[in-house]
Length: 215
Image (cartoon, rainbow, N blue to C red):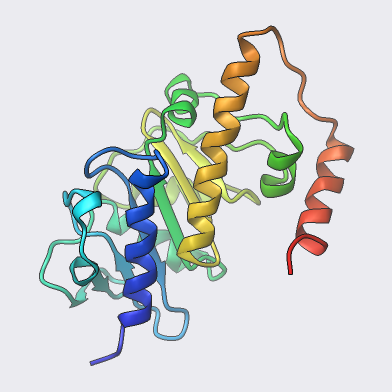
């Protein structure tokens, strides 16, 4: 049996962080991660309350959706996560949330524009909106691959938020910042119309983040 302990632990931590960060309630949302060496994927089990989720309940599947290790049924979004992993070699973590401010944009069918330097650095442009996709099969995954572009986040029409990253923790980081940006915009709009950042400023903030920020 392949040792999946580290993968399972990182995905468990990301899932437990979703309600702690105010991004979901009860059993909503999910996080997954892929081991790039084995292509095995760890994902939350379906319908389990996240603040009670145990690390051993995380399900391990292959890229075809076959259960490799685990006693529970994987998330209903598993097929969509796997579709993204099969089509994006650079993605090894996916997070799905129903965070309220960002989801309000998804319900309105509106992308989230770039109004702060933080959003410019992290996303490099607007957070796009998908078309409507049915839950439970690959449709959401197909929309993500087709519409997310160079962004690390996408709003799923009338549904919620999906973010991608090199690790589950990176995808979680993007999910947290998507919600923060949406909340800031909601608050600012109460004071009047807004103007998005100039494209040159966005490009410079993105360049700084990719090449200069961090250790």
